[in-house]
Image (tube, rainbow, N blue to C red; front, side, top):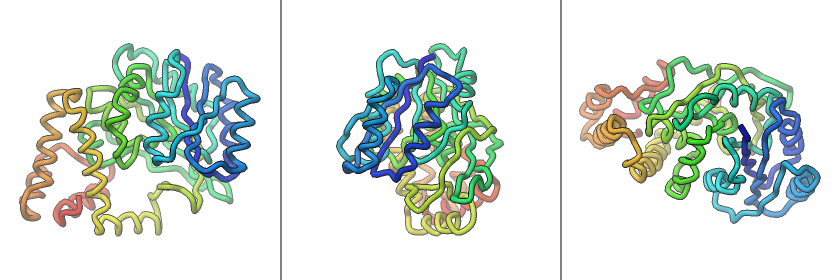
Length: 303
């Protein structure tokens, strides 16, 4: 299984050298990588370009700036046609040496059924590894994917069928909030398989320039919850469901019905009507407290 990796680059600090090195040191050898740079030309661009010239497994592409979602999704179309799987790399993490090997092993045997691998992450700070991201215990599902993403992009690996599907639908998803959330929704929506690995496979660097960050604890968690009251969560669900309607015919009949009922529940008039409609659906976030905050957002028309 030849894995094609898209590394999204945008005015990155010098951490990219550590990330590229961690990919070059993978125990699984059959991979190629496209570094897709949609930022201004910087010293980091020079470094990425020169590194690509010195390693035949790497290629460097300039792209028009259009946001990280487009950079990653359209980057899948830049991968060589003989790739049997697709993966994403952030510009500032460090991959554990067995990351690709674990993903490839998990994805074998699904044939023409789309399958997506994802995993937990170590949190990497200036002081070193500072814990792990949340452990999700509920099974991945479209009902969960409608309201929450458990598939972080820097851990995702797609099998060949999922890669083909993602390439085909990429232009329809350019306006989604997040490419990884979209892929979790897409693969579960069409009846594919999502494999969640409870073992961390990436050292996820936390710093002031993170686009999203882990956001699971402390002040960042509180800030994210406060953002819900400003309508940001509702707007993100709007973006994601709009893209799902663009691929509606690809969804299973069961998931078409669930998407319709979910959208109807969100439009219900009055907090009690919205809560009644939403609680009749199987949609649920992974954590109990997290789901309660979702229901509160539904009642307040913030979801």
